[in-house]
Length: 81
Image 1: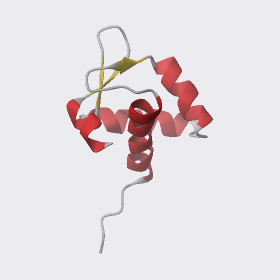
Image 2: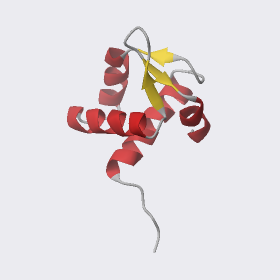
Image 3: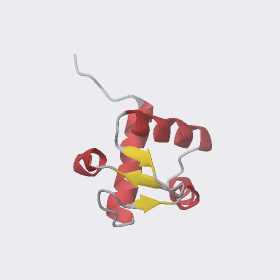
């Protein structure tokens, strides 16, 4: 049997894709939650799924809260994309 990723993990990885490939962010760079929400809505990710996926990404160490309220991409998160 394979360990298929959960829907939230799949969405969390899409968030990393948005941050790295669409926004051109590198490890340590941050993005405002409002801008990320706008990008995720464009990808048709619901508000509830967004919140759960961001929390999962934080729990896994892929994202962290920055000093100015932004979501920062970690080295681990950057390496996944």
